[in-house]
Every structure is written in structure tokens, then in C-alpha cells.
Image (cartoon, rainbow, N blue to C red; front, side, top):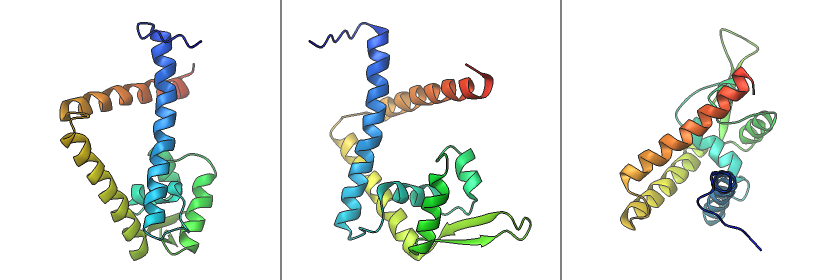
Length: 159
């Protein structure tokens, strides 16, 4: 038997953590569906998000990590694959030959624009259907940022 106690902070916190994890997986599923509809079976949703997050910027893999978009070795792997597939270009920095700058190709911008349109359409539907108001979006963002900051502080300053 499941005990759902919506007055218990511990239950709410655990449920929230599970929900955030499920939301991320669901977002990847939605992006994968959109990629399939667009005939972009060579891309996975993580790679499409990477393309979207780079956008019009030119940066290094290290900058992607420090900005909090990605962690670990999968960044390097996915960047390499995106270059091989023609969605990104990379070139050595003139100032630091060890550093490689990455940016989108025209094909990369097609993917970036597709994800942006998907996000815009979903936002319009959410607002039109009154699932969330602009004020609720602000509040939700603030609360999630607070959690992110809490865990970042734990990592930087110790548990």
C-alpha cells in the first residue's frame, strides 16, 4: 500500500526529486519524437539539447561544463559525434592551441530552431490552457533555482 502524505515534507521532497527526474526523461522523449518526425534519426535528444544550448554562442567544452549544461565525458563524446555528423564545427583557439572552440553549422541551426519552436509551441499551449500562469512560471523557476543553488553550495563548500 502506498502512503501518500501530502502534508509530510519528507514525502513531498522525495516526490519532487522523482518528478524532476521524470520530467527530464519526458523532455528527452518529447525531443526524440520531434527529431523522428523531422527525419533526424541520426541525432539523439541529448545531442539536440546540446545543439540548442550552444545556440549562437561559440564556446569550449569546458565552458559548457562550467555553465552547468553538461558534465563528464559524455560532453566530449557528443561534441565529437555532432562534428562528425555536420551539426557543429570546431577549431583550435588562436590564443590557446589546447583549447577547441565549437559553434553550430547551418545544419546545427536547423536543429536549434526546431527545438526552439517546440519549446515556444509548448509554452503557448501551457499558458493558453492555464496549466501555469506567468507568475507560477516565475515562482517555479525561482524555487528550482533555489534547489540548484543549495546543491551547488553543498558541492562547493562541503556537505
